[in-house]
Length: 244
Image 1 (cartoon, rainbow, N blue to C red):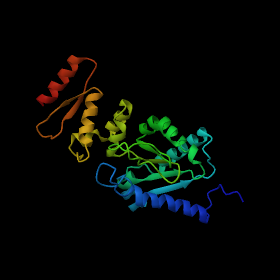
Image 2: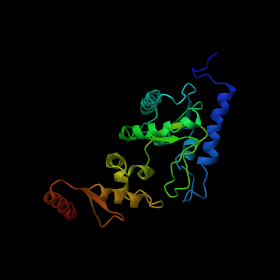
Image 3: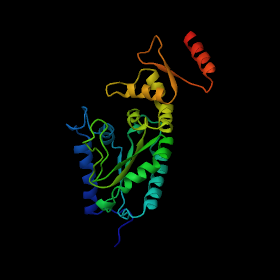
Image 4: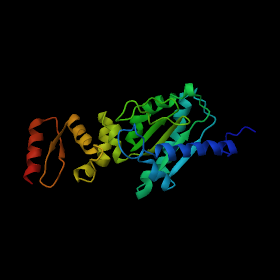
């Protein structure tokens, strides 16, 4: 019987276990080439611990039809927003791995293309979309010779945006603005650690994208004021804020 309706078989259970083992023993572990201490992805250990690590295996996908995969991912994004992207405290760690075990290695980079195409629209929803596959050449942020997105099967991973995502969202203004809407206040209230350079990167991004930085007497790091198109109005606005 053709099994493409979600029924589990011993082989499918084994595939799912392979993904979980990879997450536990590779992504949750440190690596000497990573360039920093801690797990490869700090998001995964708490997701596994909270049983918020959801797998969806799609054997009908062979990697030949990009539109088919995009439609599938968009349906998962819709479901994720409805059921898993809530205001609950632990909702941050919800994640869905959409796995394609039947996509051949030579076709696996299709997930890179899809993640690139969907990134802006996904970020606008306050979500992140990660791309993983056996041939991934995506460099680690701190070491171009280390490739942290290598996985046993091609997959696209949906999760909520987190504070550390400044690392992936500072490159383009539209991405950064979405990030800043959600996390800017945490930086201005000194609630973000600079252990891995997040604070430095945040404030350098503010400057890069046309924001003026000022220091207050109660903050270790600067708060910011949006520059208007009129320099005189900007200066008056800043002066009023400083005088308060």
